[in-house]
Image 1 (cartoon, rainbow, N blue to C red):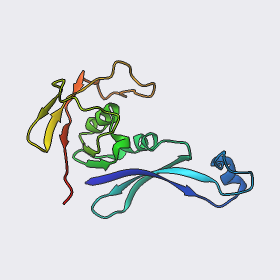
Image 2: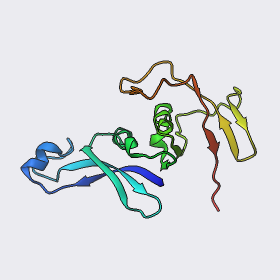
Image 3: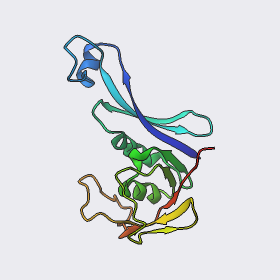
Image 4: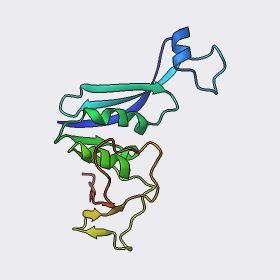
Length: 162
């Protein structure tokens, strides 16, 4: 199955329970506005149906929500997402489920063509080598999925507008 992962925010009815669980943004005056939550969702690319959703407070990043959804992927799935999901650790986790991912390259990842870390296949496609980060993020635990290798070779495809 091919899936799309993304995040968004939703406002909710102004009830005491919602206000306690999902407080209003700090910039809003008390009693003005509605509680807002951050949601992450996995959608079927074939049908558009929501396969899974997770919810958290507004200041939660999309990637934190997506990491709760990765466990629902099945071997052979292809995950589509924006550049927020394109990190070494997330590519590792997705591949540990025997899945593939198509993400836009983050603007923070610099091109390494001149350093010999990227091999040009043709004018549109290239293979890039991502070196394992020197330090591991506090949340990065392999959870029995083996250790990460010292390098990672995603294939980088450029899609041109028609």
